[in-house]
Every structure is written in C-alpha cells, then in structure tokens.
Image (cartoon, rainbow, N blue to C red; front, top):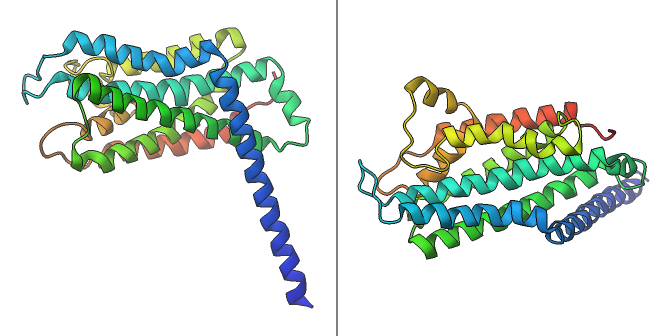
Length: 268
C-alpha cells in the first residue's frame, strides 16, 4: 500500500514541476516577443552596446597599449561586452520591473492563477536570452570589425564571467527595482546607479588611470570585477585566473538574491 501511494505522489510532483517549467517557458516567450516589438527597449538594450562598440572602437583602431604593445581594441571589446551585460541584465530588467509595478501589471499578475515565482522566472529567463544574444553579437562584431577575439586559454574565465556576471547583475537589478518610485524615474535611477561605476571601471577606456585608493575600492564592486574577468579572457600572454573577480561577482550575486527576495514589491 505504501509503495502504491508513493508512485502517484511522485508522479504528481513531477507533473507540477513540468507544468511550472512550461509556464516559465511560455512567459519567457511572451517577454521576448514584447521586447523585440518595442523599438525603444530593443534599440536601447541590444543596439546601443553594438553601436558604441563600432563608434568608440573606430576612434582607437590602430592604437596600442603602452605596456604590452597589444592593440587597444583587444581590451576595449571585453569592456563593451561588460557594458552590454550591464544594460541588458541590470538596467533593462530593473527598469522593466519598476514600470510593470508602477502600471499595476505586477499587482494584476499576483491576482491571477499564474504563480508569481513563475512570472518572475519567465522575466529572468527572457533577460538571460537577451543577454546571451548581446554577448554573442558583441564577441562576433569585435572579431569581425577589429580582429579582437578571446585567447584560447581565456575561454573558461570568459564564460564564467558572462554566466556569473549575468546572474549577479540580474539579481541586483531586481533588488534595485524596488527602490524605483515610479515609471518616470526608472531610467534615471538605473543609469545613476551604474554609469559612474562603468566609467570608473574603464568600460569605455582601456588606458584610464585612477588614484590607487579609488581603483582598489572599485575592485570590490561587480562592474569592475566583471570588466577585469572579461578582459582576462582577451588579454594576450599568460594571465592569472581571475579568481578574485569571480569571487566578487559570486558574492554580489548572493547579496542581490537575498535583497531581491526581501524587498521586491508587487504593488505600486
């Protein structure tokens, strides 16, 4: 009798998990269609990093690093790759969640049979798809336009940096979305929270020189850690495995998840 009862219970749990996965996949598909049908979101999230890569990269094409004599574009491409991740996984997600909450969409979703966790997971899955597309496009465009490609020994830290960086930034984006008061403030709050870190971390410049204390301070934040890890995948010659940068990304990812679970709001 016990064995017979255990089988249906196990099947029921399996079916529930399968149903939840189907709901997440369906929601992710809906979010992807909504994203690409919105020119403002698509241009600001997907096209902007690629345009900046071409425009800013063209201004330093032919320049070389003063210490290694490597082309500056070799380190500039991973910087723009980091920027693409920041825009897609952090700024876009935080802004979208804040806008949906301000417009009352999240409140209505919470009142439907769709589990809130499945809806949120669908949002995250869609964000990861967009981030992956941006990453692949940036790497391909950097190689085609400037001949900047990851070194063979740098593929592992590059992939780890992309994965951990996406999870970390998405978690922080969810947490920050709770601090955005309304839809009108979404862009301003997200930009103010990442742009100074991006500039100071050398996202747009491979020769940026900062005071030692400021550079050391920025290394404890995820943007600088992400830039350093991704550049370790591109920098020529022997490179140390970026354990410190990956650890910073992992730590901030855990912090972001804990904060998001605690502060995320479904009502305006």
